[in-house]
Length: 251
Length: 308
Image (cartoon, rainbow over all chains, first blue to last red; front, side, top):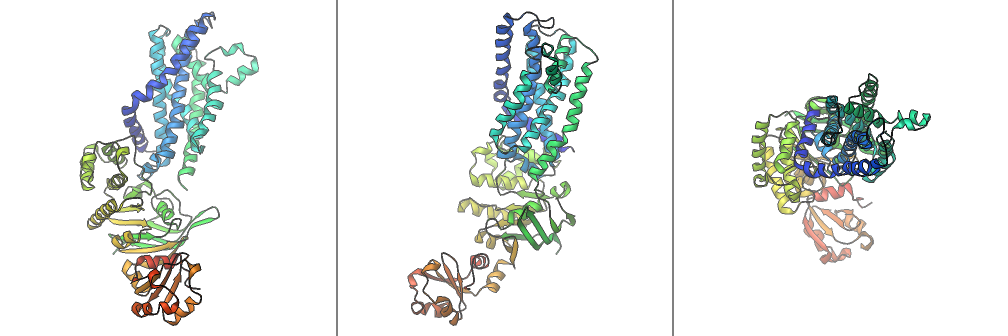
């Protein structure tokens, strides 16, 4: 790992500067549709959840999911296009950059995208009065940890993936279940005990807990456990896409 | 002269397939060295080992004095790579492609900008500086890839089929630029399956087939040494040749090489052999008499069954 990680990141930043309007606008539409349909539509039927309005309940959760999707799409489709179609990785490997530099540069960039997408939703839910605490500021650094983790998992899949269509499986069979059973749309304590235990295996659940608590100012030491789980998993897993990508690129 | 790349008994295997099967070569500083061979001969695999996309399985590979198994970043910093497939960054403009590449060598941005401008001018791309890469023609893309490979002022430029797919005018322009690089003292290493490219550019070359080196030398030396100076090319499929041709040609001191679609009759005395064509049962209208060239050497070594 060298300064070249930063140089890879800089290349992605250059591209983002040109394409951010097309790139970002479309992706923001989906969380807003959820907020409208669920928050205002379903929210009329639902009373309070955990002492807050349903719109507030899901609005804060959507910060985490939006950030997860951003990192996921960047580290799947985004990285795969560079790897497979554009051969950008190969071009970088002709320079002193190594596979580890490229993978970590991609992960950092995906984490940045998480931060950007999470931030926009955070601004929106703050603007409509759903955020109640200055602790919400801690959501910014947390988005980077959260994004790095989901990017690591996604890039591991990408380094194995042979065809762009396979990402449909990843999105449908992995990301979507995480999204639906993360405690964004309903509190998990309404589920049977075994299902609550299962939720602990859902990384997005940990993020939703952290983001929602920070937004509401409901701080408790236990939140650190969720954060530490994500950091530990990121450190444990980050070598995996590096090794797998090395195997794929260097024969 | 000092050697900058040296390979001794080099091997590369993919599973059961041996792509490079114990080759030796030595490239001197400042020369243009060529790998000539058909597709799948092991040329690209050898190039990949040189520029760090493949590990050396067995044998010794020394680049710029360092023995390597996977080319390390410090060596890569002194190489310029022109891969077979254009891998320009389509998300960036022509100029930005060079600048983004320069960053990986730690070239300060003001210096990178000056160097990029100079290279775009050298490759005749200066008017395209702000264009999208996607809008460039195949020939211009190739020139940009070469410009990119020069951004770090490399000691060695490795070109994997630099002109494949280009039209003749674009090809000649690339050749002219490569000659200019050689004049500047840059060592060139290229793979090709174009004879003309090899004979126009290379000081020395190896002919490689099925992972093995079949011959090595300067293009002229190979032609003069390995085959007789003249050839009568018979444009008939091997199945339509008159019976007993091989034996009768050999009696006339000529050396037949039979390929599926044509036959070469190599000879030191072409005129005399030409006069015998009808007696050999050949129609002179399907035959051409010409001096032998590098392509004959290549076809003889890689495809001919030497009349046996």
